[in-house]
Length: 271
Image 1 (cartoon, one colour):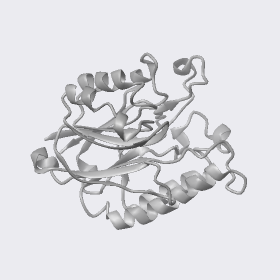
Image 2 (tube, helix red, strand yellow; image 1 turned 45 degrees about the vertical axis):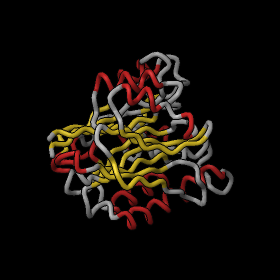
Image 3 (spheres, helix red, strand yellow; image 1 turned 90 degrees about the vertical axis):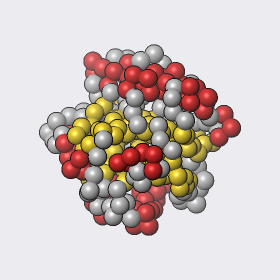
Image 4 (tube, helix red, strand yellow; image 1 turned 180 degrees about the vertical axis):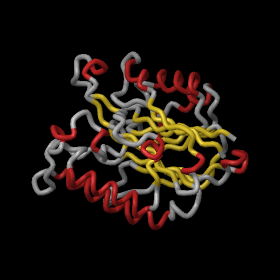
């Protein structure tokens, strides 16, 4: 069985629902995980998604900020929304695929939207950066409780950190920029390693290949400048890493009309 899962920071699901349905139609992932949906629960565009052939939707949201969703071809179970940092700000949702998913039945999926952290990489003067570091620290406890490495699991999301040298357009120029500071990158890598999870993109496409999934809106010609960062990740439990056949960024989606500043990242597993 070939199983595909996509992670995409959509930057407002209501504003970009046409892009979501286009992606579902053209790419047909088995599961699509969205972040930054910026949508309260009662306004989530379920009807349009179901019309695209995806009947099973789990989501957590709030007005104007954050928000995560998991859209599935298959029935799902054990949906859970977890709060971090004593906040109920819709940054994590998880579930398991039901028995109808065939070889993927029972697969646990965790979808995260890690805080961006603001502009100043100093927790003493920037509460947003302090929040980000606290969130990452609490993710270490989550990984232990969820036992993500001891059962088939996929952890995805906009983690708002480009951890490796070739995950950014210029390692030297971005060392002091939030999302690529040594404190963030070392914290994220330690978290992933302690959780026993595999960075699927870099497992298949190791450095020095440059890989980006985000390009700033501030660039007048984002594609030509190509000053990107790899902020979006798909981590696999060790039993799934050997059956991952590809992990690709749909760069062209960054060029669609009124795009998100993130592009979809899709992993293909052969179960």
